[in-house]
Image (tube, rainbow, N blue to C red; front, side):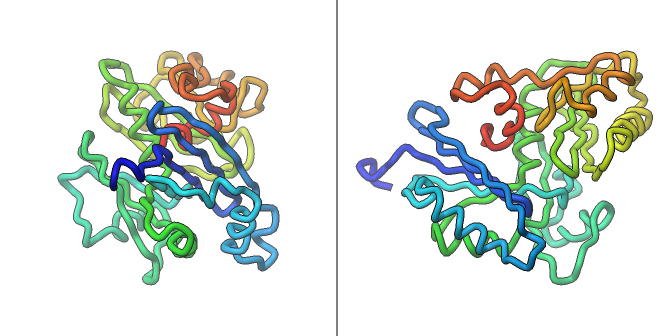
Length: 268
């Protein structure tokens, strides 16, 4: 790109079946200049998700501006991580079949996380990608969990204790266990009640011989200390905290809660 044409602007859009959120970055100053989110209430009423996306493009003029870079982040629980030595891109579906229902017609993708010699294998939303091709022509796409795990691994440098992080969203949460830039476990769970939530945390801890009196548990995402989910974790695990987002807040003017809730998008 000719330097005179460079806009120093990047757009990240996170998409799921329940909504989309996006933020615009000023890449010269590494700051977030705007953020919006849109929840879809009517997905199950026979409305095509592409039509809901079209509405978002009508409502938010920022989506129609021109950017040097556009990143689409697929947020679903149809993903897994595979160490590079065991990875073969001809068998993407076989890695996913252990933790999700895989169909012959599914399209698979992977993100290479070369710093840590792992690959994230996942099923992107093909219809959404097709919609964005029409809007932007070219763009990159990644899975939300690739960004999440990379950021958590980066932050674990020289920390020799095993740490459990839970990324909490409506309907599902991800458990990530890390020790000094090594990914020990990643799994995604669907939940309905606080009891489901703590059951999976304690079950995972037991599998890895983590003592609830000792291991640190950090919570990320749409959760705060008043939440029933936080309270039940606090009851059964001694060292519970919300993830520290002070470093992330240096590049935006959003609250601590918003930075925690949109941790993946703001880190993209």
